[in-house]
Length: 589
Image (tube, rainbow, N blue to C red; front, top):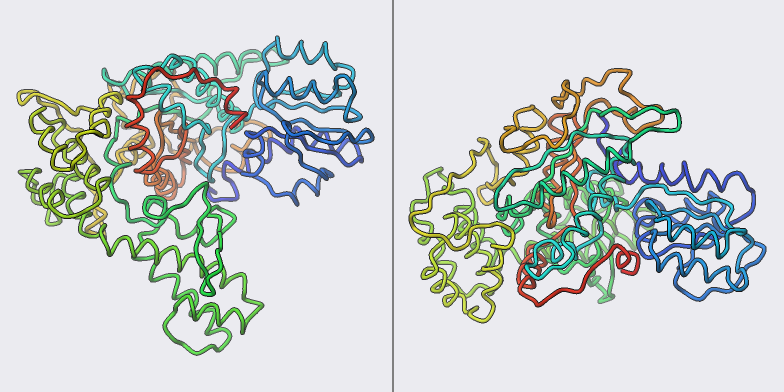
């Protein structure tokens, strides 16, 4: 099965845009202006380049909210979120005087009748096309998506939230557009847990909205279920994975290095400030991101040596300085060497943090998370594992992470014990970092008599003693693919085809003309984590797809988190009554 970048989510989204917006453009030879809101700007940037748009006769890309000069001889394409703010901005472009010859309007999702009628009354004579193309999610990577909504965490988990239901409704609508883009009508399941009720609520909403969306088509036919499953789970299901120090390249870099919006800033040898984007346009990043840092630090110098050998450069120790010299001598190889310089620098940054602090922390973290040491001996007294971390001068965030791993490992501690731990870490006035996990359904305070059964884990072998932990979601993916998920723990909100077992047996009549199903053999497993997705969980989707080959795993959430961003979100749950948040705000972000 082709599960690589060429058949990923970004390609599916770009194909949908081409089949709708671009196809309409092709009917006219006139060059056009494309007008976007902040969300559709992100969406388009994630799946195409300006050169792709130029090839389709789109000559200018403009911001919907900015003041623009009229260009009366040109047609304008509006690609926007169906919100009052976007529609008002659109109307202002044609009232009292038009800025453009005509308008082709495309909404990311269903446009409420009230907004549509307002547009029609105000400037209907200028609108040539008005369509809903159903893409209101962001394709982050080939197998990863987000709903571009970090604020959903507060809306869903804050005890002061006033818009939990509405936020879940919005997420459900976005998940329906994901399924529509992939041409899937999946069976829906959720993780049942009495302390985590949002997964069931979201599963019910998605299932109902899918049924409405795939109701009778123009020919009076109903779309049947496809060979896909959608599993919905909450962040509290696995609190360990997003808190641990991870040693695979992508997860480690986003945890330890200051990377914002996928931009890595670094200083070149000459002192100049440089910036590199860590995305799938960088093929080296795509090939290295899931490898262990030990492999990455070996591979990059080898690659550089191959280039220097091909140009008969002297074989010496690979350093940033050597690479800049090579670029001067070999301008034809500048791009290749620049790419490797970025990753040599980033890997060095990761290793610097690792050597300073993280290496010593990792052993204790792994023992607490796994419940056994490197030799496989059970950790009988987790407090003895934790104490050396508390006594060492680690940073307060690192100590908080270790305390949390201890609490998770014993499934909650006593109030007395927790107070001592908080004093040890010196966070008496910031105890929310620990206490607020209860809002996610995670046991923090417990009584000595309370016993909780830990889930059975799969046996796994590992090459690296400091990377023994495997995210829970990987077990779930593998069980789902093998049709081994317990229906008592993972109830069906709606059934998928009886034949689904991840084996990839898709009959001819279940295929859909022009669908992305045709590009690959097999079924799809879609996983949605309410409350944020960690980089280690993203990696699992690729690993399981690679291992199984007959099933593509796609994973997503409201947003992607890092350990530090999650801790700040947890702490913020104590803040007072929240302002209500609607989808309108997403188009303003």
